[in-house]
Length: 160
Image (cartoon, rainbow, N blue to C red):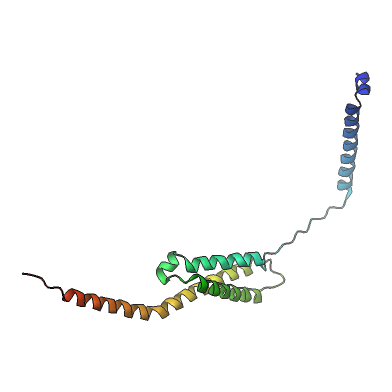
């Protein structure tokens, strides 16, 4: 059998490599076990959000304000251009409010929650105020349409 190993140099190299790897692994295990055990300190923070995240929030706001949704059924939709301006303003204001409440001890979760709540609150306030401002106009136009429709109907003659 030893004759075969000597005849095949590639096989012998592989065996030597395996033996060397085994020695390296055991040396690493010894070094690890002898190293002082200290916990790894991993730190991350989710505040402030990246610009990419902030842009995604703005895009979602634009979509929510300018496309048909439950919100738009109640308060109406806003043009894409106007929704873009409003979304940027809402996000910026919410970011500033949340950022002002940030502390060094915080991991960012509470601040992120505040940021999210501020965005929702400001979005609702915006659509409600627009709806409130539009309500008197739309009420008058509906009453005008009803009056016009009533006049049209009263002009119709019926035969006995």
